[in-house]
Length: 185
Image (cartoon, rainbow, N blue to C red; front, side, top):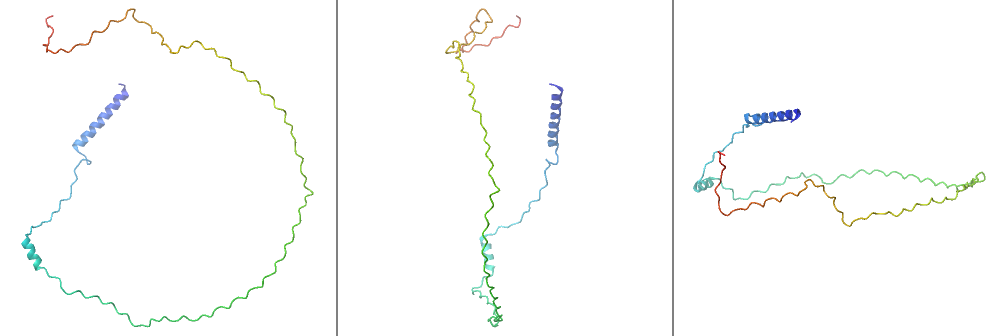
């Protein structure tokens, strides 16, 4: 490990340990906040006989129907609306007599004598030159291609082939006692 890795690991370990110690010792973040005391109201259990006695002592609603509220009386004033004052209608304005429309004068034809058509410029286009002849590709001569490529032979490291590995160990049906090598040997 180089120096920068050691320094980073040390700083990380110190900060983690500091955070764990702060969580254990406690800070404002982990301190329990005081809760408001629970308010309880005292109640008593009442028997059915006590409830019946309480209900009998309650005042009874009156059996007479409630009186209907009386609508307020409206003072007897005249309900006729006063007639509006007659305003004389304004006199109609006299219509002015329409003026006769003057006939428009015919427009004079424009003078075309000063205008002349410029002669069209004729440019001679040289005849197209024929395209240079395109070379025809020559026939490509291919070497013999085998239908299936063969891998290159690998160089031999040892002149003789390696021996075949021993066959796998067999599992015995009978238990055999464990043996230990002699310590004197």
